[in-house]
Image (cartoon, rainbow, N blue to C red; front, side, top):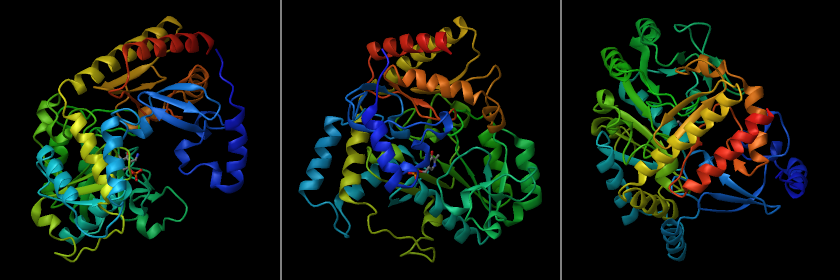
Length: 436
Ligand code: PMP
């Protein structure tokens, strides 16, 4: 079976006339997989998408993470409909916000106080402002390959070594801002030490994805986060965990309480940024942390942050409904089992056809890199075969399997995937590898 997509192609040509690059987020373009028209979807339900040409796809994108329940989950849909009927935006506080804040605090105990915003980008951006307000310092340290949204400070690449200042990763980010950022490799304590020795006294915060989701799925080495936290605090800086992907992805909670991760589980950051899953598919972000730090935020303190749409009843209702679904017993175990089967099937298909594949599985998600070495940091993730991935991606798409169009992105299972979906996907992968 090879899928035809004339309507997607026509729509893409028209989109290029009206929308910059034809897409509203660059990650949706097929630039990273050899180009071509992205698929225009018109409907999604459970584990499936239907495109504008009526082709069906099994979806492993999950909208880059948020759709952990599968698309159009009835409990979430009902909550959104109810919210719409009650008015979508008030500009006043609501009981719903209090309820979701309580649910987040119960699941992530390091957050004494929470504030809702509209995206992961906003959440991260504000944690940096709050850390700067609290410490009265300006620099931040982050890790190569970790993505924290598109605000100026986190769109900065590494300089030439771990103890050098950053260079802008995007046009429009001033050099003066890039000079406030130091980027070091992940899973490398000596590099972090070196950066802190040189810049620690000026550093407001060290920002990290505790479990990386942005250059594949990458676990921290044993003891890494513990040392990261200790060194950061010794320098008088704050630890910020960007859990926009990781919170509620691997279990009901964040990486801070992930039992599969015992030696790091009890480590609490000073601030946490959230997004994606906590909005059940509607726009959301949130940040929270220790009371004394969060009390820097207006109206209590001098750090300003506001939002017309923040805490809107539709997003909050969808978030509450999504977390309610995720509380059901056995949910994560099932995704874990299916991801294991799928990852095993992919690996076997790759082996059989003579392709090296490195799979990093963390419960219901995994990354599959075309390489014959481990992937534990960004350098290793870069040093994988993107051209081969691009061809694999298209062979899968043409068989109705929707993956993220980038060699760095994860495969996300949802609670809607079935054993049949996994078997069909493995079959498609066997065919794809045989054609590569
Ligand atoms: N942090 C992380 C870890 C992310 O993966 C992302 C988005 N992929 C963001 C922040 C930004 O979130 P948003 O796209 O909602 O602004």
